[in-house]
Amino acid sequence: MAATNQVKSMNWYGRELTTATEGMIADSTNSVIDSLSATAEIIPGHPVVLSAAGQVAPVTTDALAATVIGVAAHSHIQPTAIGVGISYESGDTVPVVTFGDVYVQLGAANTTAGVAAAVASDTENGAAVYRFVPYVSGSSTTFAVANATILDTGSAGDLVRLRIRK
Image 1 (cartoon, rainbow, N blue to C red):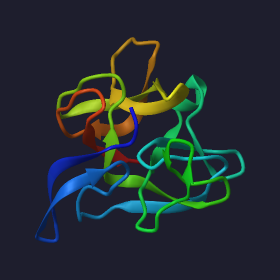
Image 2 (image 1 turned 180 degrees about the vertical axis):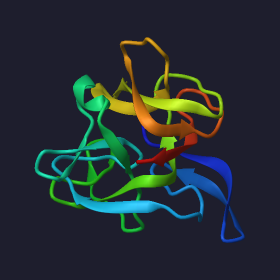
Image 3 (image 1 turned 120 degrees about the horizontal axis):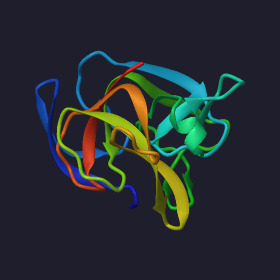
Image 4 (image 1 turned 135 degrees about the vertical axis):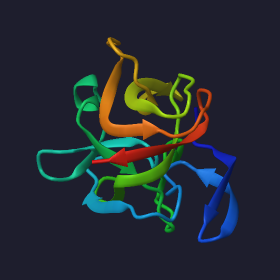
């Protein structure tokens, strides 16, 4: 599932916007966005973790999946294009949403609004990536993200709002 733009109704300071993109802040309510240096390539809208050096890293293993601190936000200055899409390079400053609503692309699972969020491994262009999915109790392939809720109903690959409170 490559990064995608989708028509999503939203209101930003009274102005109706109709296009959402991965990692886009979903509304104009208060958010906490931390600026951290990237240890590796990070794609906007993907879950991230804090490294031992205090930098931000993409989720690359199941062990890291349980330690998600937030979502890489899309910034107005386009990050450098690497590989299959837009991403931040190692050493770039990455805006990380740790408290707020942000658009994310669902992994390989359908969801309903109001369910707890988890991350799970997915494949994109032959490479493993971790995406947000609905939490399934007792699953060995989805890893719960504490204080994260999926706010919209959607199918696999859809953009949905994720509320994160870290």
